[in-house]
Image 1 (cartoon, rainbow, N blue to C red):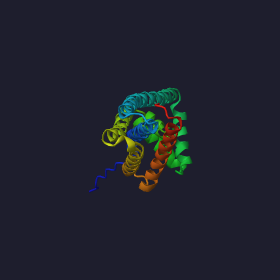
Image 2 (cartoon, rainbow, N blue to C red):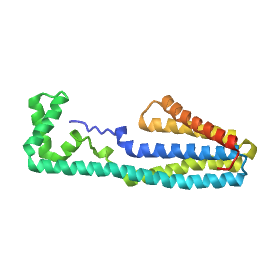
Image 3 (cartoon, rainbow, N blue to C red):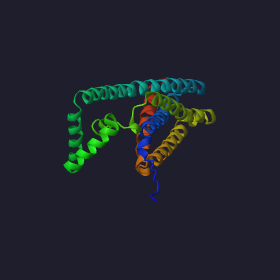
Image 4 (tube, helix red, strand yellow):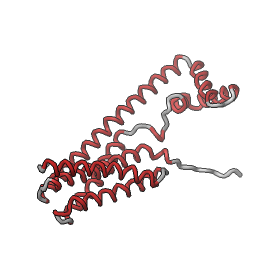
Length: 231
C-alpha cells in the first residue's frame, strides 16, 4: 500500500515572509535611526518620543501603501497575462499544446513523452498548466496585495516599537549608544529568525541585516551631531 507523502516547501512562505522581514527591518532601522539622529542633536526625551511615534505611524502607513500598490501592480500583470493566455487557448488550442510540449522538451523531456504530458495536463487544466509552466505563475507565489500590505504595516509597527520602548527606560545621556546597540541586536535576531523560517544561511542573513542597520544608524547619528538640530 503506497504511503501518502505530504511536503510543505518554504517557497510557500515567500509572499508574506518577504513583506514581514521588510516591514520589521524597516521599522527597526528607520525608527532607531530617527531616534539616534534626534538624540545626537541633544533633543529632550519628549521630543525624541514625538519624533519616534510620528515615524512609527508614518512608516507603517507608508509600508502598507507601498506594498499594496506594488503588489497590486504585480497582480494586475498576472491577470493580464492569464487573460491573454485564455484567449490564445480558445483561439488555437493545438498551437498552445505544441507550445507547452516544447517547453518540456527544452527542460530535457523526450519529445514523445513531452507531447503526452502536455496533452494530459491540458485535458486536466489547460490554463493552469500554461500559467505554471509558461508564465511562471503558481498558487504559492501569486501576488496578494492585502496580505502584503497588512503584514508590512504590522511588522513595521512592531519593529518600530522596540527602539521606542528603549527610549522610555534609558537615561537621556546614553540614548545614542544604547538605542543603537539594542537596535543592532534586534536586527541580528530578525536576520536569524528570517533565515530559520526561510531556510537560508543564518550567519549570512544576520550579518547582512546588521551591517546595513549599523550603516544607517551611524550616518544618522553623524547628521544629528553635525547639525545639532531637531529633525
